[in-house]
Amino acid sequence: MSLLRTLFWTSRPISWVNTAYPYGFAYLLSGGSWRDWVFWAGVVFFLVPYNLAMYGINDVFDHESDLLNPRKGGVEGALAERSSHRPTLGASALSCLPFLGMLLAAGGLWSGLALVVSMFAVVAYSAPPFRFKEVPFLDSITSATHFVGPAVVGALMLGESVPAAGWAALGAFVAWSMASHAFGSVQDIRADREAGIGSVGTVLGARGTVRVAVGLYLLAALLMLATPLPWTWLAVVPLVYVASIAPFAGLPDDRCEEAHAGWTRFLWLNYAAGAAVTITGIAQAS
Image (cartoon, rainbow, N blue to C red):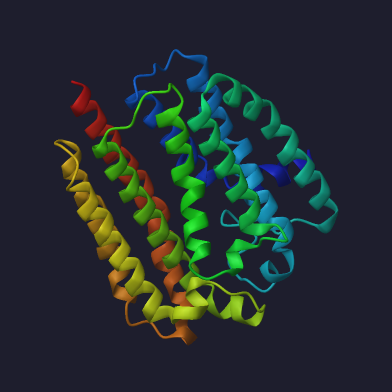
């Protein structure tokens, strides 16, 4: 029970929906049905096993730096005992493999390639020898792949072509995800520097990183304007995130931890954003 509890918190339950929802929503938009077993196989996979792998690998290989980070030890990251590291990696692999086999068999070449890229990003972000999380700018791109990848898999699973408007929406999702990762790195600038870890935040500093995040959210809004109604209205969503993080645009590095208030707000804004996307999808279908 102790190990199960550790695995549960390691998988970041507050973030499960952030990967399962994009897959399921994209699958339905591409013409699939919620009655399809492929829909449920993908949703379950991206709900728990995918997150266990993504965050479990991160917690194992970031253990030393996490000890210096005051945010860790709760819903934003487990501080598991070293004795649980090997079981965590084993559980991550064992829980993912059956679903990967099913999804690769059910899909085609392009959905399979998207799935492989997504899983590579999950591993390469934290695990050596890649450690993309320590490569500034590549860290934000890889993090975006973690969340956009499931949507691309869902969109391609049935073998249907994605229209230009769909790619514009996916591009907006990429920009939004990169902005979110960049802003999330701000609160850890001092901890990362003390641990010798590079990131987009440690390179640009708090002010520069927040401003880049604002720019990427604005890009996401512009890309949504390239989609047809009613999707165009979702251009408002990234602007809400701009309003949320704009107060931190002048934050000095020695007060970077204050950005945590904005990050906490971000976690809850995601649910409101998801509701807006759902309502828009219902409006489009009706």
